[in-house]
Image 1 (cartoon, helix red, strand yellow):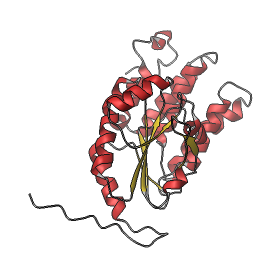
Image 2 (image 1 turned 180 degrees about the vertical axis):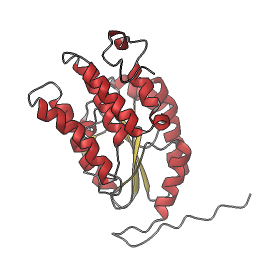
Image 3 (image 1 turned 90 degrees about the vertical axis):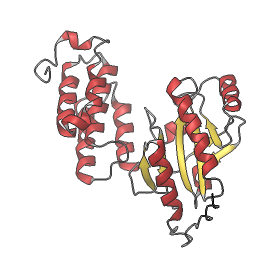
Image 4 (image 1 turned 90 degrees about the horizontal axis):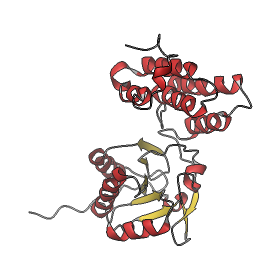
Length: 264
C-alpha cells in the first residue's frame, strides 16, 4: 500500500518497520518483477550516505529477479543489469566491491554449471579442497553456533551424514564462528562427525572464494562438480541427494546402487 509512492518518506527508515525484510518475504506473493521494482524504488529513496541500506535494497532487487543459482539467461541478465547500472553511475563509490561480488555470483554459481574450486582448512589447520570430493555428491553447508537457528540446522546435518553413510556422498560444513573455543565445545556437544571448515567469521576463505556476502544454508553439488540445488529444506535435501547419488557420473559412467533395506 505504501510503495512506490511513499518510498522517500523518512518514516520508512524506522528499524522496527524493516520494510525490506517484509518485502523479501512477499516476493512469492507479489511476484519477482513487482518485488524488484519496489526494491529499486526503495534504493532510489535512500540517501547516498546510507550505503548499507542501499545495498540491502539492491540485494533484494537482484535476488527477486535471479536468486542464487538462477540459470535462466533472461533473469540472470536482468539481475546483472541492476549491478552494472550502479557501477556505471558511480565507479568509485562505496558499493563497487559489492557490485563486483554480486556479478561474480550471478555468472559463476549457476545451477547446472561446474562450481569453482576453493581451498580452506579445518579448525586444526588441515587443508580441505572442494575438488578432493569429485566423484561424490557434495553438500556445502554454512552454519554458526552463535546463531540460534543454526543449532537446529547442525542437528539436521548430523542426521543427514549418518543416514547417507556408505553412499558416494560428502557433507562439508563451513562454520563461521569467530571463537575457536565455542566451535570446539559445540562440535563435541552436538556429536558432529562430518568434515568441516573453520572460517573464523563471516568473511573466511570459502565465502571469499565464492564472493558470498550473505551465505546460503547449503549448496548441493553433483558427482561431476556441477551445482544442482541451493537452499533446500531438510526433507527435500535428503531426497535430492538420494536421487543424485543414483545418477551415473560422467567421469566414471557408473551409478551407485544402494543396498536393499533389511526387512522390518
